[in-house]
Length: 259
Image (cartoon, rainbow, N blue to C red; front, side):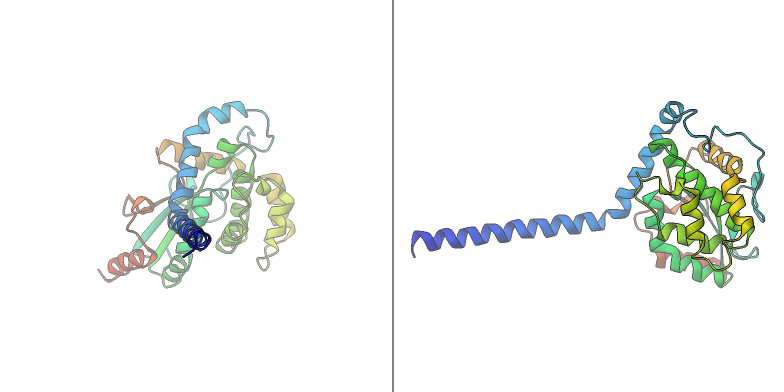
């Protein structure tokens, strides 16, 4: 075999080895996507106090804006901070603390949404959503607050779950404060039948529920949760359970319903 042929085969093997390493790395990134996204939102919690101080006074629509605490229609729980989805008589309750700018929250929603909808519609599970503004504090802006306020406005209109899902389906990059635009939030309301009304627009533009969102965020901080999403079932944060899957959660709910 000529030296040229040997070099050619060696080069081909090297290229193949490099390509295999690339494929392994891509697969590893895919498997750890949700975990990685969760770390980003957890890091936000560590930075929130300092950055909130640095951003004080910069955002007129931010946490600095004072006003009466107006809970959305149908909000329940302590201080009316929970937006319920599902029947009151469901035997199981899932408590979700979330931020519409948080990529880990979006990843959780993408994986679990069909199961949550199925169980809630069957009357077996009640989901209580608590809205926070963690990413605003970490990266600046007001998208977490404004999106949460808009979601609360959708709750007033009886369209929370539909609009909630639309927000996650159209979530911008974490560093992009697109949800800080009232016009963008109203545009997305057009994807929910019957939501884009004068009342909804006024609620969004006035920041009717801003102080309520801020109070919810204060409750989140007081709870000393590790980050978003915090997903509690039976008092345990199942999002931190690496063995948890939608199928496993469904079986837990089904078992509680049978019992």
